[in-house]
Length: 312
Image (cartoon, rainbow, N blue to C red; front, side, top):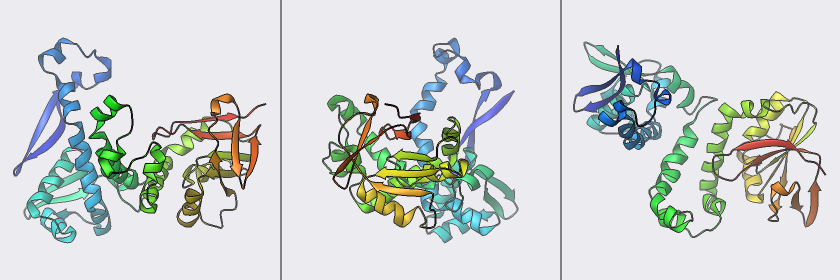
């Protein structure tokens, strides 16, 4: 039985691209199957993948999902365009693309097409949702996307491309990401949005209940720390991060009444955590952290996290 994979707008029409049910579980088939060689569907999907991302990013940026949530009722493309200050043609095509991606649903009436959010969009694509991914999507759209435009140069040169993308020369990726308070705030808000949906799962993978003092190295805006004290209410979490990050986190993300989360301004001295010890420089003094559960980021931008007990 055929089922639609994606619908893309073509003028006033929606074209449904179909595939057979047998072809749906791509992970179960080899890339070089006869089907792929006759019609390289997976290659075509990879080829246009960035288009899908940009449709979703653009709808978020323009406020489509927020407007439909706030309206409380389906709206026409003309009404949405008028309220958001866009062209009617452009908005209609964007909305139809979102319908094809199942980010929006459409109802055809005598008055015309009326659009509403799908449940997944209400939960993850609206700013007001506790699980909103809006901020990380905006960071990917406006920062990561531009850097990946120079991926070939990054491979040739073996270095980040912030200079080409933003005119900033920095050997330290975080120096580029934190190039201004505005950019730092965007990055921290983006990381917080990711932790809002996966932080509890990460922390629950390790039994930290025996520990009362937990250290979060590079804890940023404190979203993982908040998940930690929620999951382990008897714990206290200390976030170590750069002074400017700590200041912004206190001002924007962690309320002062949350006494289970503390901050310490810190600078790494260049030693690797793989050596089994981490040294934090605080107020000119070197403190060796031992026998403490540590939440550690790998600095890759993906925040791969591992928790482990520090030992002598």
